[in-house]
Length: 121
Image 1 (cartoon, rainbow, N blue to C red):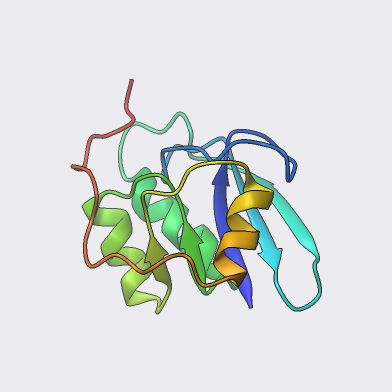
Image 2 (cartoon, rainbow, N blue to C red; image 1 turned 60 degrees about the horizontal axis):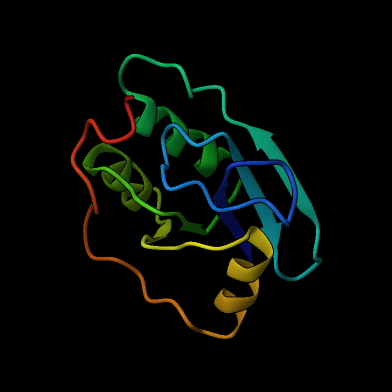
């Protein structure tokens, strides 16, 4: 299964970025093959709609689960509509988060964790 972890850097040792739409990187980790696909987020400087655009990008990458610090309402709806499970409130390194997910330590959220303008500054 492909997990998408929002990240401040481009490696397993990078910290989880607390933002979804404006995170620095998306780390796509395949739990079956241990393959990593690191995607620099093209939406970090966008004026608006970045949560939706980032959600569409993650859907195109085939992720089934997003693990992030926070997710706004537009991104949440976009991910949910694509059938992607959303887990917010996540922190630590990408590697720690992947291992915790594999151990069943996270539960999906039932809604956005922040308002629509979170992460603009």
